[in-house]
Length: 149
Image: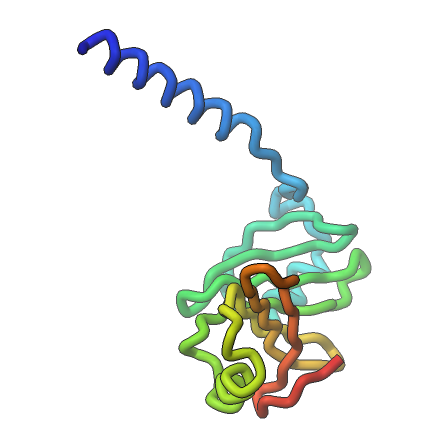
């Protein structure tokens, strides 16, 4: 009995080690002092006193932080220009117009993920919907419940 417990424990430890060691991070973590000052200043104007974790993602600087209990990702071009901000949103926090649109048009789908996206020329909710046996649906919906392209 003790031998079986030992073998199961050993198997679990080996599996856990494999899982944790084989995970890769596609993002390149950056030290705060390596971020161009124009980008840091822009972030401080937008979100004063936020301590951010910095990464390089697809050639853009990404600042990650938590504000009011929500995860923020703020993207900047290498020249310091703000690209977009993505904020994780709970379904319950969606405006009623968005919930009504989803209920009327996607009642047989499950909401998998919701983000609030702000860009220089657009603001919308990005909603990812799932349905067994169907492709995922990605919608961009304004706070007024209007789908945008």
